[in-house]
Image (cartoon, rainbow, N blue to C red):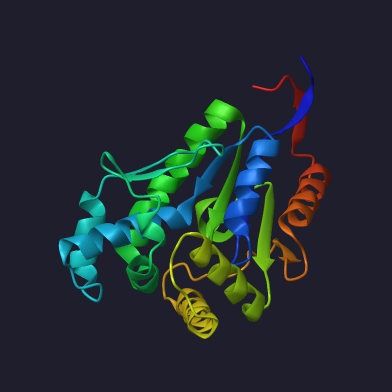
Length: 240
């Protein structure tokens, strides 16, 4: 059996929409035999539950109650991630326009963040126990969810580039989009995430900043692998 380098500990990837976080996080986790957690998908799942319940997203107490009752289940296998509400797989539905438009308001509710952060920390602990390493992506991983992560990276990219990437993803998924409206949505989400009172999106003080504007996915993964190696977060063993 071939010998490979595998991740030990946590890699925290933060940054706004369209920087490539999800794709590179999954690919990095697969390369390093690690678990994977998309925390943003958890907020989207709660948002879907809020919308389905008919709850006003501006009613913080009501939103918090829905979040507490929602049965959010996420898979941490980077080769086959999923997001469920109860037994229903909602992985595709949570990427729709309705959820995307409402998720920042739901994610800004302090009780929602407290509830989901506790879940996320438990999932990270479980993943570390099972696989030895976890790649976790979101907007507050290095600052809140996993502040002791061995490597923290804040991904950035030019807003125009991020909007083009988001539009391409939506088109590939069969959703009709216009570049200008996507750019407006990206910039609005940036403002909301960066200015919310609880756990705003910001780089950790010790995060490495990586601009992905002119990098393709494989180049970003390569850069992350180099950072992982520099931080001595690899150990050699037989692949699982």
